[in-house]
Length: 131
Image (cartoon, rainbow, N blue to C red; front, side, top):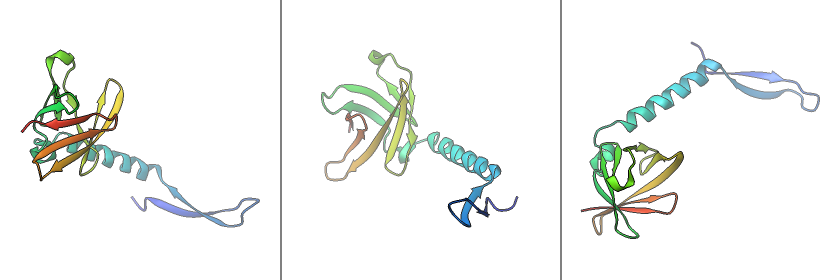
């Protein structure tokens, strides 16, 4: 057990007595394990984002139906010939998905004035949720 980091003094020909923080392999492994557990638990919650993203989604530019979000997955329209894509949380108002080898990050916008929900994706595409 013990501390996750220790402090030690190092001497270098150019620097005298510089303090350096060194993390133990155990603490690094525990930190990675915690982060992976957090990500997994967030990504499999039913009613992803409190259920606010559940429903049918369209591309804002041309109003074409993309598919629907169910739990933590984007279920694509058959014309896209793509299996459901897992959506994961990247913060309170951010999500991401891995699609064809690329990571796409989205900012969720809940508009109270016109009761619209949007996702603004990192590639410039904007999705709007059907009411």
